[in-house]
Image 1 (cartoon, rainbow, N blue to C red):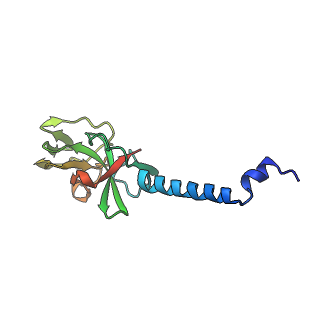
Image 2: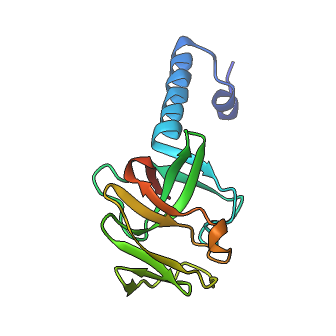
Image 3: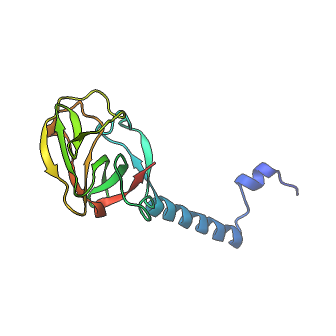
Length: 164
């Protein structure tokens, strides 16, 4: 009895060879999507307009295997265990001084151009030096008061990877 391509493709005969293929495929997908490309659903508005609330992206865990985090990188940070992850932008590295003056970001007393942010509130944050082994992160949405924003120094070890 001849079978069509459609039938063979969508309803394959369940053989030991097919079972092995299916198990290998499932294991590879689990490995990739739990250890290499971690899917992230964005909840919240802290990274708008770059990432919208309710959107979807991936965290590339291999991003910092051979390089170090740098200014402007958007990173996924483990906030509480493995379930809560924050997306933030790196604005200063270890040893640098960061401050906000009337909504303008200054790193080492030099103004930083930030074309990725929407109009912001006049944040004021006194100068603070980033400690060794840490980076300073902040979200792109600066239209909320400074007090309501999750930002600050984060240990580099807490960075899961870069965001695609």
